[in-house]
Figure 1 (cartoon, helix red, strand yellow):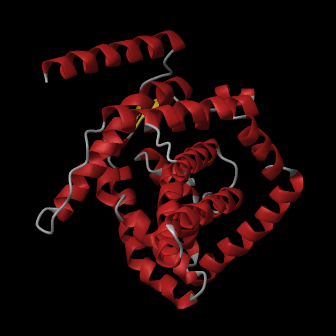
Figure 2 (figure 1 turned 90 degrees about the vertical axis):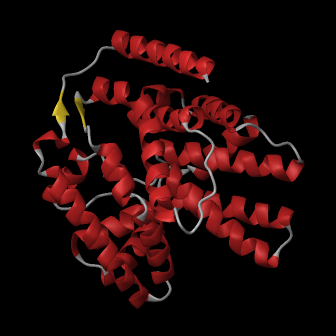
Amino acid sequence: MVIITLWLQVITAPAASIWAENWRNFLIMRVEKWLPGDEGILAAGMLWGGSEGLSRQTKEAYRRVGLLHIVAASGYNVTLVTGWILSASLIWLSRRWALGVTMIGVVIYMLLAGWQPSIIRAGIMSILAMLGLILGRERDAKWLLILTGVVMLAWNRELISDIGFQLSFAATWGILWLMPQRSTLNAQNAITGLFVVDLKTTLAAQAMTTPLILHHFGNLSVISPLVNAAVLWTVPLIMEITAVGLLIGPINYLAWPLLRMQTWVVGSVAAWPISNWELGKMSWWWVAVYYVMLFLLIKILSTKH
């Protein structure tokens, strides 16, 4: 834990941050060169994080339906990047070397995507999991999440009050705790299966983040799970296309119809009166009551099954 904490201090040094910011800006401009307007900003945001420059109307629409998180680099992005690098590395390298190369790739991505709590959390979890595989000491994902939280707080105790830190850990814990084991999809149920998996994942994350969202913001998107399930499948496709497009520019055009479909769905649903409810801020007392009640409910349901 001490080694990881020191490592975080080194790679977040000003010199490393400046280098990463310059490269990040260059890569974002590469995407926006081929995909102008909000579509380009969304595509770059999905790959590297950030919604700077997004029109007020589009940004508000994504906020109202609870989808603004897809343009903030998160654990989802780290998982995809880890899978890409590992799959490519395994073609040429042994398992141990491939894991080592992937760990380096994850660190570079963390630098380029910015030091948001969700990126740090997912990056550390990914690195710890791969270290465990290299050393032959696999760990349960929940314990990795707890260890990651301890490391991050040892590195910066002020993160405990950071909204991004709270939401990232709550959402991840909800998915690990509440999501049932995913079943393998076959060709016949692939489309509906992906929709159901995305819906369950969103509901599990939202079950844990809802009281925190109400505490900090006082509003809630009641149709967020459905909208997430409807468009979330486009995110990895857009990320893959724009990643290849960094090398072969015209490839970016393939992401255009996906981005247009996504913005149309979000814009249409955001206009519905029920897309966002202003409920007022929830006190920490009621946040605690909510989590106790949720825990008891899950225990009762799991006992019955």
